[in-house]
Amino acid sequence: MSRLIASDIVTGYGKQEIVHGVSLTADSGEITCIFGPNGCGKSTLLKAIAGALPAWRGEVRIDERALSNLPAHMIVRHGLVMMPQGGGVFPRLTVLENLRMGGYAVVDGRLVEQRIETLLEEYPSLKRRTTVAAGSLSGGEQMMLALARALVSEPRFILLDEPSAGLSPALVSQTLERVQALTRHGIGIVMVEQNIREALPMADRLYILAAGETRFEGTPQDVRDDAQLMEIYMGQDSASATDALS
Ligand SMILES: Nc1ncnc2c1ncn2[C@@H]1O[C@H](COP(=O)(O)OP(=O)(O)O)[C@@H](O)[C@H]1O
Ligand SMILES: [Mg+2]
Image (cartoon, rainbow, N blue to C red; front, side):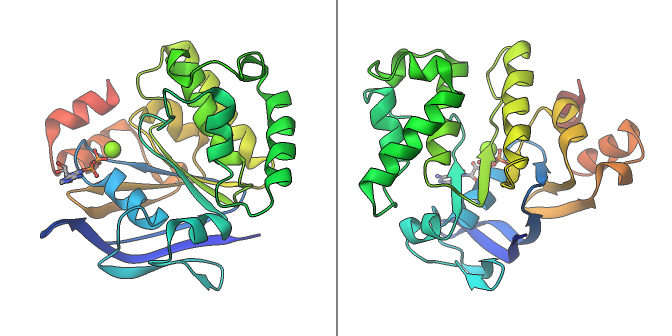
């Protein structure tokens, strides 16, 4: 069992502080969800945890190992990867080349090829299209590719930024089922989602952010009802609360 701990993270862009001291704990084999209105700093927080953005203050670690402000490839080697909003596949590269990018932090190239081969067995739609440019895949397939690419480094924790965004309802369920399946391999998931209705039942823990601060922390059982969720959201911005629950 591993635990990812982010404590008191402060970060932002330029001089603008966006995340004002957020702490978060995630366990391996569990799904930890982050919800919150648009623009409240969810993606910014994920980037700071993954080392894609410097943390101005605070600490990130997996168990006893401090990850804060290590170079990104070292963070990947210690078992933490992020799938950015939109998946972040390279559209001009082929499916196979994208998967190889997922292994860039792995020293042994043969190991990367072996892992890709094994992964492709679980993603038959990708296996049929390894030589195709990733940009020609459908949105759902690109998200699958992004997920598969994140797995090439055999992470202990994956940070997912809105994996279901822009997908049709059928694909939303399919994608979230894939995410859930990863926990059965012991991987810990930290997932930002706008799709609260679909994501909440999957969550083992949840955080609600508003304006760069933690507004709620607990389990789905701690959420009394939709009215309470609304209230947590509305504290900041009633329009996004209505959006989030519609
Ligand atoms: N690259 C950037 N440069 C400057 N400001 C940014 C950048 N990315 C996001 N922001 C700002 O940071 C705030 C939080 O954004 P973000 O973390 O993307 O929110 P969320 O993911 O919760 O929708 C927003 O006000 C946004 O405009
Ligand atoms: Mg975002």
